[in-house]
Length: 544
Image (cartoon, rainbow, N blue to C red; front, side):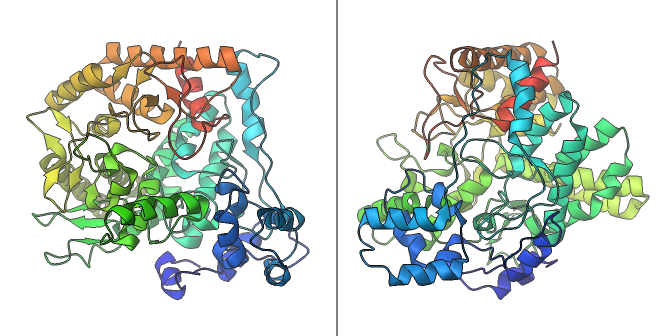
């Protein structure tokens, strides 16, 4: 199934997606074939009413647990068996049915009882988090043909933007073959369905994540000291670019946005996060339903489908959830039901798209195609000019996301503003002003906080995250602000080390305002493992 969009038109919402062609494409590539027919699809399609009944109960504290279960027999047989049971309203009966018919994913703590030194612990974790090429089986896992590293905890599959930061540590520890395998997996997914989903689960096939594939290719090219790597992955980079720019020919002054593409007031094109679904996330079904019901109770005229899409699109951003996607209420709070992600043109996404265009231009140059190279250089230049026009605030000296529905910048200060520094997009004056805001408003005891707003969402204060520490540190270094960059580095590494010393864990996120208190907020507990934390720590530690 080469073209995702032809595939998308062939499926039916809301029960969507019995991925028969997809299944054949993936399962034939695996090392070992299943002995029985395999049915891979979304949990809604596989399990029908059973899915909804389970997700409406508290059988599993985490909504992701059931959608990751592996059926012990064909989903069709399970649906038939479920139709025949009595007492479906009894939670005990429902739980017994699930335990009888499914393998429930186990939680494996990543902590180290032997108190290895932190870097040795991380090197040990690479083998713990490593997954070998998948064997196709019924359920929601999209099997991959090569080995890969998962984040850990509840995240039992590969994740798109996580993987780049994980690769930083793998590179430091000499695991180049693993990096190569992971990039080949992503290239394979692009070849198969036309884009890289959030993770290799069927319920993620409505969305991607921040597009870091071009950065992965650049990393591998540097590690191998071989520019032919760019040419090798050029078809996949171009295909991913087409995914993000799909709909560019459909926008106009009358139709401002289509898919990921937004036509700005002056006719230039920028991008937004946009999930193709307008229904509750399978892996957070009860949470999404609760959020929308809460909103409708306050305002029955709200667009339910847009609310679901905005929740899902925030998940595509990787920042799920953050004040960036919310509207501030008169009392100063940021209620989750004010989510309006698809109205926003984000700084970070368009910086990543700029990098994608520049990397494709370089790949064409290496290939010897100067015409195509110049075309993508021109695209990158137009995007840079547009980002400055719409997202740079000269009065405040900072980059802000832009709400194209109001024609105004949002007021949210966030670390998305360091992305233009990371990609050398800022002028010296812009970089100086961004540096001052980061130092004055976002630098905390344990590193940089994602935003200064304490909303209860996990991508807001007081939490700090490894990928944004790395983007901030490198972005500041690009403009000579080594003192602040190194201060962030030392503070971040210290909080990693102190938590590890106490609990022998590498965590998904950290409280950088008060490191004595664990990171928290959001829809699920703080996870240990943890792929991108390991990667960034290991890379920074290697600089000593």
